[in-house]
Length: 166
Image 1 (spheres, rainbow, N blue to C red):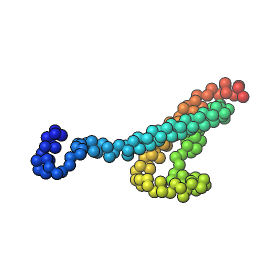
Image 2: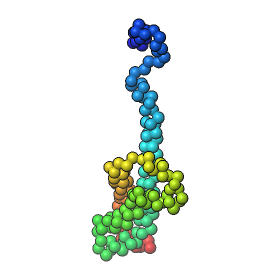
Image 3: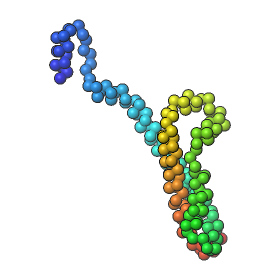
Image 4: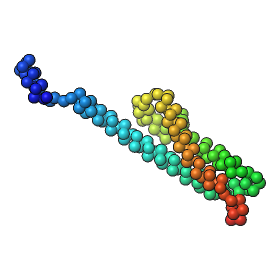
């Protein structure tokens, strides 16, 4: 088809140069290659950050639930059921893992002295409220999931064994 196109252009105006012929899909692909790569790279780093945040939350709450079995055991010995212990761990763990708000992130940047350097990048970001709410909600779900494993472990503590070890 390229040769036929060159012949037709030469028949209409032989002085017109035909350097390269490409389909619109190829042109669009070439023009979107860098932005697509940037978005994919950002997605990989976001997934890595989310994984590290979930692992940190899990590690903190695991450490907390291992250090505090006596408290859970005493509550269970006094009549608390597993649901109450589960809610206790979640009530103490989830606020620690709350997603950072924009104000919090901005104040952290100001404290580090990085606010002037970060301002152009932050202005360039999309100001879509649905994106911010969705990201915060997703991080809250990940935090809740990271809290569940240590909470269920703390709820399954046998009070007699835990008190005997102490």
